[in-house]
Image 1 (cartoon, rainbow, N blue to C red):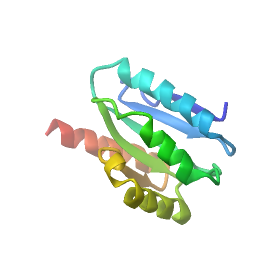
Image 2 (tube, rainbow, N blue to C red):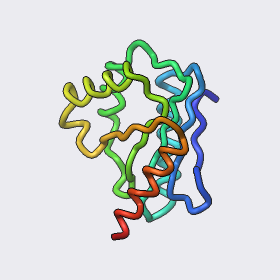
Image 3 (cartoon, rainbow, N blue to C red):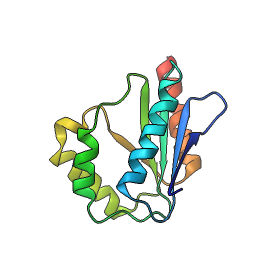
Image 4 (cartoon, one colour):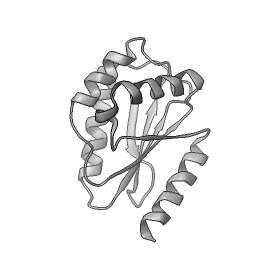
Length: 132
């Protein structure tokens, strides 16, 4: 499987999407559907970690992103999205997507982390902020 989607912790508060080196847009659609099912199975906030470490990004990213954004809205209990392993080029692409699809990107902002441990720390901090 090109993208593995699973709970990242026993409390079911974080979903982890692990991208393998090669993946396709249909693989991502399946992974998102699985993540939606996991998020929908609980009532509390669920954050997402998107681990792109070592993954190649398809060339048609603008078209793929446009189609993905048009496919629906985030779940009401969907929390933050933290991307791991995004190089400078991918961060620039994200900034371009934000500018190009500004209205569609609202509520779907992404945070970036260097490592999986950093992503988990960011999410722990966000969870504490929600409780305050």
